[in-house]
Picture 1 (cartoon, rainbow, N blue to C red):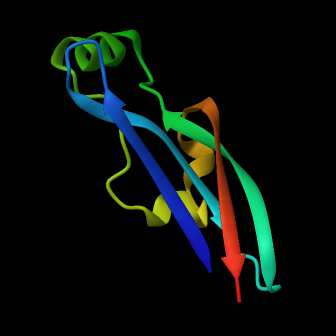
Picture 2 (picture 1 turned 180 degrees about the horizontal axis):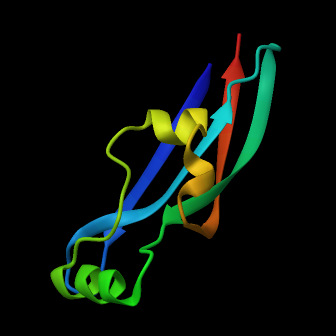
Picture 3 (picture 1 turned 90 degrees about the vertical axis):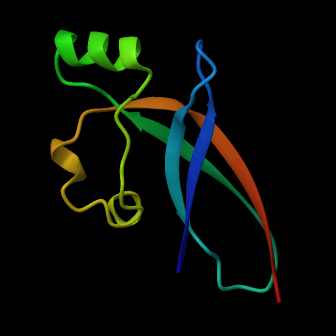
Length: 92
């Protein structure tokens, strides 16, 4: 099993936009576990798309969380690193 994390936040105009996506496998071993998830965000492919997304306030984002979890087909998607998220698990 995996946990998919989608982080949203306000942009310069106050619109909620995606700040990052990430996924991590849930540990099976009982105990307390801490995992750091590298976050990434999709990028526009052309300057015109970048300007249009900035102007309209609609940045590229994934509509299906399976894209983040599986990674299949993501090698053709342009993404940019966007920080880290740390998650703690308490497994019983």
